[in-house]
Image (cartoon, rainbow, N blue to C red; front, side, top):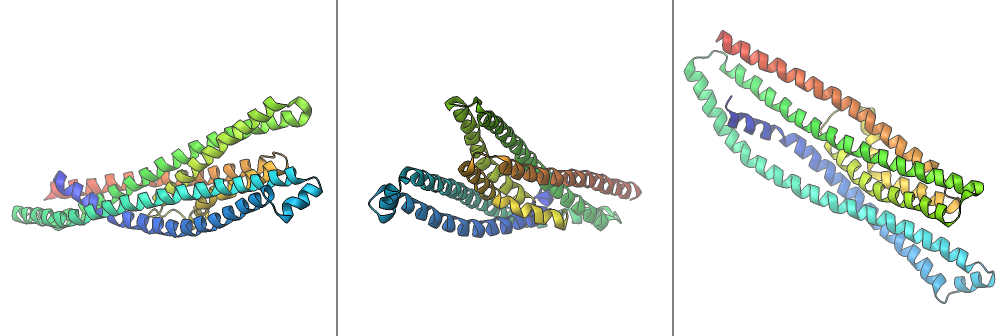
Length: 309
């Protein structure tokens, strides 16, 4: 098979995978559209609560009378900050989804052009094989099409594996930051604290927060790469939760801050997600090996047909 025909076959074979990714991204866009609208409403409400306590309102007057205005204001500011962090994360993901959709639509446009070229090259090769008198001409073409499809599938698997390893690496970094924060928190609880301990603990929490935004993007990309790869029904259900990872994480983390800097809930959330990533990667690696075996077997069939021709 000529290189140009093989390249065209692979490109055309990518079309179903790209269409599956596009559908997945469109579903993600709908989900994040709703999420952003909901979070904007929640943030505005939290901001209004802060402004009421900072200005002239009955709530401001009441908390001043009972001597708890500063305490209530700190709580409302913390809740407003938490709402803004979640909103910012969702808006970043929505922008990323729009960019990914545009990229895949561009690739699909290129494939539509490649499909016409592929038909022309395929007819040329079929004519050459028939003219040569090879009895197995159509069989060879059919097997080569299967090889191209498997090569395209292997490419998708490798991209998913790469996305998975990247996400797992970030999860490890988050766990490291949370473990450090937990260590400083324990030191603080047993009287070894002070301002330095407090700052060190929150420095690690801030770093974890930044990394969670990065991990959310990587989880979303991992889920998109898995769109056309059939693993198991159970695994597909599990990875659906990837899109809400940051939301769950921030709910746990900010709640922990409010009740005393307990970080276990957030660590459990990250560990659970890392476990799901690892389980999916194990299956993907097995699928890549199976694809390699299938490609090698089909190539041997082609060689055998040519030898017998």
